[in-house]
Image (tube, rainbow, N blue to C red):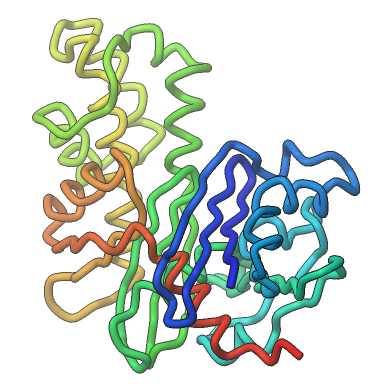
Length: 297
């Protein structure tokens, strides 16, 4: 089977063995925003055409490719939802020479009744679980970070935090960025930002302190991005752990890869939780598990 995690800005394709093992993988910048109208069949052929020519006849897609801006919209599946529900709700997509299916995204509501949605993260979540009946709290860092509650092996609910996008906007398009010269990384400045997030005054007040601490020589330009990152991630982690309402210290599965994993892991630890890194190929495993349950014929 061919599995594709096809997002807004990038795509990851996997060729999977019958037992779900990854035989080959490809990753590129060919996200859905780069595909012209009507161009998805050609884009898929360009991505995995040689695998199709080599005999693969099943293709399972997940992510923003199933959105209104993608190849074909796959309606959101309401939480709670697990493997069987996801497999039963896949959407067929016409494609010559292969059976192509889209995994639906998930929808939920927060405590106030405001809608939440995800596309693509659901396959990473099910691919991370060690047991089909597991309870877990997972964090998927990114531009729009997701915190996911799993109960009995099913995704019970989740919350989205625009922390990564907010960091980029504040750094690149506000006065805060004028005093930043280094990257965001784990260290004393990041920890100071996390600590500040626990104090009174609120996020909007705390943000301006990134500038004033620099003005008065208490925050070096090379540390300012780390401080800002700690501030934003600290507020996110505090809100997410409070919303999770767990008894005792929180055990959080981190799903993803790259520098954000270390930042989130440190922030969770500073907030009294424990972060456990997950499999960077969780999406491939999740798609393999869903593919096993699909009625392809």
